[in-house]
Length: 482
Length: 92
Image (cartoon, rainbow over all chains, first blue to last red; front, side, top):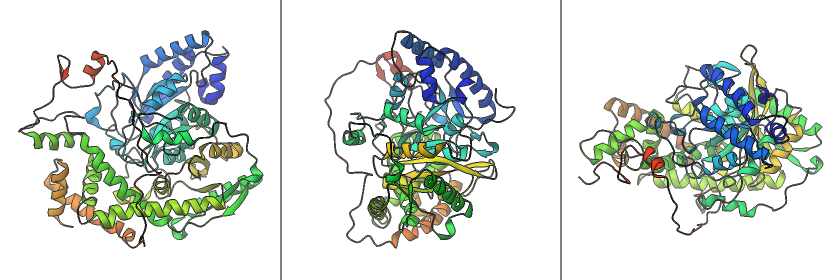
């Protein structure tokens, strides 16, 4: 497939000037998806007919002289976003036959910009997790080595060249961890940059739409398409604060990258080496480097999980078999609720909704839930102080390599994998996972984090050193590259 | 943390859980609460809780009707009859 070796914005330009057609690329892309999906289990649904129809529309619009910034770009969409006329499993076997009557705002925007939706990607049980190991459709495998989980199926789709852009959700770090595990770029934007209308969010204050791609420039084009006020998602009011003028080219000499090389024993030596090597690349790119210390970071993961579980217990209550979800056979109303939720939730979703309810109980509300919200405030204040010392902050994404298939860790160990990502969600900051190197032949990323609304600066700075990163942006496995 | 408190939570959110899973959940919940203990030790005196990532404001929008395609709505529901969604009885 030609598309996998070109960036999305280059490809859109070629289609725009008549050197290529969306139809041709879509046909080739679908063939590749069908071949790879059989071994990687990336997609819950491949939208073959719809993709060919959309490609035809794009070619017609281009022929009519329309300019589309993402013309013909193959797009994957995580299966917790609604797409009109397509299945939306939301990560539950109970929804596998549900066909959405409308599209998420982000999906609409990307299709209007010319993207061709290739399919819906796999996800954990009700979107809860960052491995795909708890998916009712089985785990998605990592294109770099199928012994490992993909982390994010959308990241695997980009990494293996099944698409060039993936619309993702990120709550505690699924997008950033997946991007790291698959060797690509993944942006969790500032909450409010992208409308969440049509995204099934299990955690109202954390779940966020994000973008995965093989380079930061493509993410920048997609973010421009996606960003904006949407009256259907109140959080997007933040976009009214965005400067009208686009940020000009950056001058590295005026930008300080803060480097946090971890907190004692928790930081692996491999992560420390990656930070040091990547810091050096920033230095070579004329950026200033400054050592930063973070005091509260260690306890923020726990605070994140308290708030996320409490919000999940509330958000998941709508799946009662009446408003949402299949109604189970039952003798009375209570049994209908109980059995319908039983059919809808997997083990992890049951655990989170029950534990969240316990944390919101009378005796635990103050010492856990409100305490966690206060820690969030303290951490936001600490990060605001950090961004007075530096413009952006470089820190690890992962504690370990991607989970091995068939060796599922205990649930608390799984939560600990979000150690570097969930605190950033708690503070409401934008973060980009960028490929930084390999450990044991598997890709590992780092996070570039900024203050609220620094998304564009993060992407420009990442683009400034992207060529110097030590792993190829797209994994192409010999013998698998059809 | 005991089984009575766990069962109260399960009853509150109304979800069917087998006795074996309840035992497993109770053990897991005890571990989870132990894992959370350090959170309680952080000094948060005089700190206001942050319910949102950023300051939240409410945006009101105009009520307006939109035309929906009935066949699309029908496909989205398990039971649809004469322009209405049919749901199980909600009054016992």
